[in-house]
Length: 556
Image 1 (cartoon, rainbow, N blue to C red):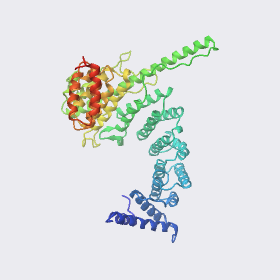
Image 2: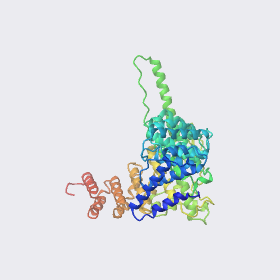
Image 3: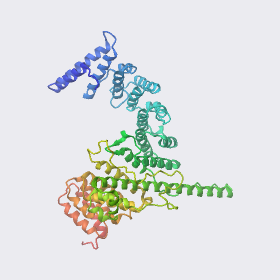
């Protein structure tokens, strides 16, 4: 622990011991007056320690909610201090009271420019500790012009081939994300898609990958069309997921025995931003003056391009299905080993029931997930192993390696990883829903049955998330009959105390209604009208639509 500054400790103690807010304010104003006099008329030049002490007091006063309009020049002068503690106090002061226009009490463009120059200097010197402080300060910048000035330097620092350490590259990616949000024009699609795609392919440090994936995720959301870079980004993300699922992860990235679950979740979310199955690409029509042979050549080239794009799309879709299948299977294996520690794996595999909705309904999480591992394998034309097809095949982890298996010596035995498993599972299910027609039908049926079982039992948070995913899958005709089996459990949710669960259940019942169950749903909604005033307008609207659509006569 860093040694405390005695003057700062006494000041904080005086403020906390103030008997009233007026006495606290008087003590703060008294200290501000002392600091102002010390800055304006020093008896002798302030030492770095004295500047650090004054800046620390000013930071505490700012955090209390009092305006601070002094100390900026002193903070700039302290940025060149050779001592880490003094420089960290100066960068922290600049972060909160200079470069961030939302919290700064004064607009000082000249001093802000000097701070940006100090950030550039620290990054050029490549001192890891000081560069980390500079990047932390840069992440607070709210001026688009300053962001545009520093952005090229951040790109050079974050480059995987640069000499910067993984910590510095990770912070540089985070700063790029902050600057991109301030000014999206800093990363046009034709620039970021190729450069960040290559960085995603060559970056080996998973901590840097998490920041890089966050940057790509927000860039994809801001881009309407990715054109030819989509497959490259998808395959790169799939390869990283395969690396995580095969547990090829450093020890420090295991969380409760699970390798980098936060990165796995983010990669699954990123893959949901891409459109896997798209329509035919538009081909520009020829001008009337073009010759017929050139037009035919262009049509042939277009057909060849269409075939290549279709082949790549099928390869990506198959790889994504394999990723989802692997997650389902390995979660099943982890829960199976935990629930049945004294049974051999071979005997357990032989005793598994066939995949069906009824098996999920009356079973625990481990049993539900265990039945998912019997999904049929896709075989290649040679009949040997799984295929990913096409150029740029994505690596799929071996089925014998468990992503969710407990890792000894990492504290995994202390807390159950159920929440982490659900987080990865839900994103995998969301990905299978996003694939739509490209998703394997058995995977979709398994996901639907699993979600229905979560609706019937479990934590309220799991129920709410499961209901939202069921609502997203309700429009799929392949799984709609399976989802209807959960209607009785959803009807029981109308009596829950949590109003968010009730609202979600009402919307889902409307989506799952049909000629065979509409009357049961309407009667349950009518009963809930008398006891649920909060959802009354929503229930009334759904009842009116259901009766108008399915009622046999107007007097029903």
